[in-house]
Amino acid sequence: MTAHAAGGGLEAASLVELAVRRLRSEILSGALAPGERLVEEQLTRRFGTSRAPLREALRRLGEQGLVEHLPRRGVRVAELSARDVDELFSLRDVLEQFAVRAALAGGAGPEPGPLAALAATVERMERAAAAGEALEQAAAHRDFHLALVALAGHHHLRRAYEPVLMRLQLYMATNLRREARARSAGEGARRHRRLYDAIASGDLDAVLAELERHGGRAYLTTEPTGP
Image (cartoon, rainbow, N blue to C red; front, side, top):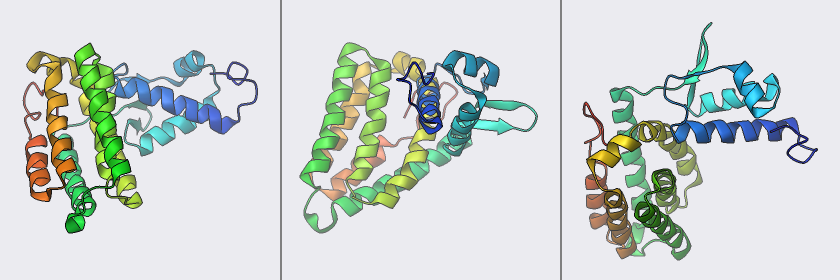
């Protein structure tokens, strides 16, 4: 991650962005577990960067809700309580309902371009499920929900929605193994295909009904199984 290794001309801002992307990827994949301490000395050695860009990267990740800065105890990967998860999913549901109402207003149906982008994420989920690639399926799941909200063409909605979804990825990352034990790899893809088909039909009532089923609260158990 050094400037030399990356091509010799990286600005400090580029080093910050690289650190953000790498740490975010490790957090959302479950490689860094909730509650795990992030030690600056270890990370600067591993990433080959100085403390200044690393600290800025950690600050940005804190704004995204992925890490927590604790007084006199440093930085750790954020943890979510059952109440946090419930509130975040409830907020996700409200924002997604607003998005589909906006997208399907007037009965015209969603715009072809955004709808095609949504279809592509479902296809990615289906391929990942067939190949047993849990991390790719989780990434496609995140992109599906971002594409769903993008159907509304509402930029401020997307800006409000993205950090909610990002924090929910923390929950998903810790439950990949539990979800794999609880249900087949293809079940999640099938649920998203049903939701996509309802959206493509342009039937708002059908979409809202599918969203309600899609957002069930089975994850808030002693052994959560995923959204």
